[in-house]
Image (cartoon, rainbow, N blue to C red; front, side, top):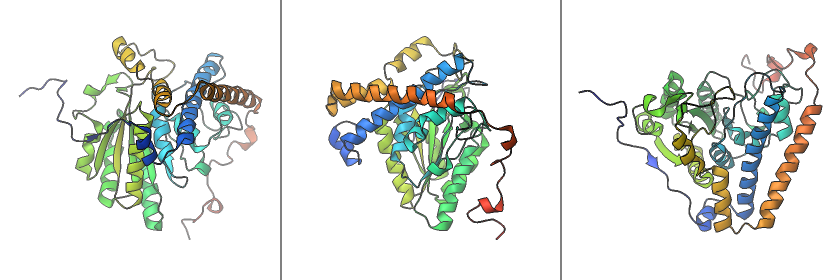
Length: 357
């Protein structure tokens, strides 16, 4: 029997409900100051990428430039749920993870421009960055190659009997690759303390989801690997936080992996060179109405009594932070060519537990 390309199997994964009242948020472990901090991190995340666009147009960022506009709530929500000793492998749409974990914006701008003070000290470009001291592992271009890395970290936690969790990010387009299947098969079989986070922005470059997979959701696949799949509105930062925290703590307590699918829309092209002409205009307009920053600002107004003064103070603080960060990054020197190989290759002395001992 022939099937239409639009055919979808019945959904299997649990579909998370939005967060309602302030009392529900408190039950999830957040107080009012936490909520205002989340709003600040959302503003910083978008502000970093907006200013990055300006730097690119000024010719100060080499190569291309990638953003996660529309994905801020997913990144910030998941990272807020992580414990300080957990580790993660965020990708190029997950700037909010770096912000929440404590990477200073001026170092991100320095990274964009290939300066000495960026996390990679000018040895890698653009968003291929992470600060290991903050529990983050730098990405590579070949997505989803970081999932096996996250699973490896989770296996190490199991072997060492550490109550830590690893988080691995991937996009719905990269879920077609074998790395995803192999990682989830191994993690599910061993019940490892890992959470898989799918940034489903509905377009694998220019390929829509109905041509990417036949299930209703990417998270529907989790059942076949032996663990739970959850679909959450990726524009609802509190719902993302709640589901991520549940998954992380379940993994920490020995309950095995969870696949959390954050449904968003990539509100810009794949990168600055792509005008996203293939995305229907009504689709952009519909998702723009759920802008994660505006959505959370409205929620804070209605549920946490955020005042005009508080909002203005947070906004002004973020603007000053980013303006100062830009200036500091501009003052950062270019890397010294004589240090080209420093830090590229590990020595036995660099390792906590050298493999040969």
